[in-house]
Length: 239
Image 1: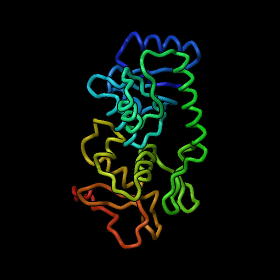
Image 2: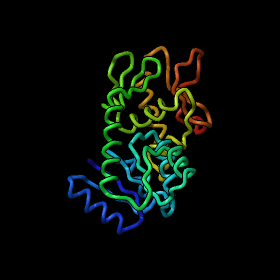
Image 3: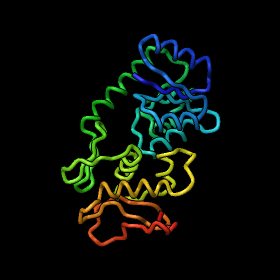
């Protein structure tokens, strides 16, 4: 099992590494919110142990941004806050479990095992679908009309975010954050990825699913009325 520990207490991190590595786990760590968010969004983890009080970006905000990016990785929030309103706030931000400090390491291990097992169980039936477009979150396979789609990782991530939000619109900023976190590249990289995704998903299909919303972003939905789904490369407002 591969874990990400986002915690600024060095002694606690050291204890976690010593305990879990002895049991065959692989761990990464981050000492602050932005670093933890970057690692969680750009690497595959079975679970994340996330402290609430973090430098630069608190745990609840890290979790909120992680969920907005479309990530479903199990997250256990670790904190000294033990009041009911705090626990409710953590769960509403997207936490899967909540453990207050101080705690026993065997209890943390059992809780993480339960989270990963539940996530694995859900994975077999976690299929997003919009019209005849499907994305299997367990296998990462995508298809439309029963025909397999070959997607680059960036396009697959964009597709997941758009399908999770469907039929609502997704802003450019949110899509850029899903791909690059807080450091999106200059230029029209997002537009290029959307172009590739649109070519794979819509292609020659009569019903287009990916729609550009000028000055807003994009939407993935089966629309019954004609819509402007293609964007001129020279128009920055349609990117």
